[in-house]
Length: 242
Image (tube, rainbow, N blue to C red; front, top):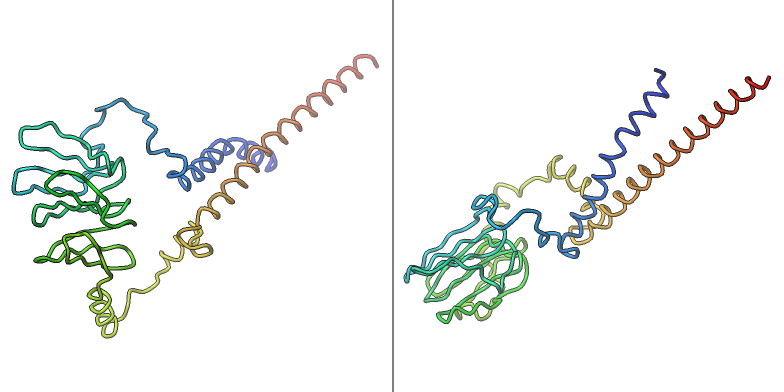
């Protein structure tokens, strides 16, 4: 086989994997808009409980247990049946805390709170990584900011504690370095060019181009093979008549 033949057949063999990577890249970039997390491919109960991916656990004074998972918050009352907290839905819950009869859940859709009546409401929007209590104060951490509440979670305001402590540490020891690994990841995802919120533009563009090149390459190859077949058939017919 010639180098040209190897190139052609390897291109055809890799067309399907490239198509799969291209389509899935676009689906991943738009998972929230398309609701792919809500499309079930297995029946209820299959792979449980590991499929939930437990993130946090809390047991309150009255014996109620809360399980923060990648797919929402599950509450289990004493002697009751575990139930999913509908207000939070299927979004990831990363951390749990309780103070004065109020339960807090931190996750991808914000910070949620439930009083003694069991009614869940959103205390703070955004992507919240953790929640903790210190006396009467409640702290919630996002990627950019530490937040504090002194009224039971009714309102939150920025807290300077983290900025002061981390700035003081960086002044002595330096801030974390921007590593080659981080640069590679930011280049790969497009974050370096468009930022985190708009990196989907990079993913969509690359995915769409790869998909077009793969499909058009197959079409071009098929047309070339068809022309060869027709030319071969024509040559054979001409030789027979000659």
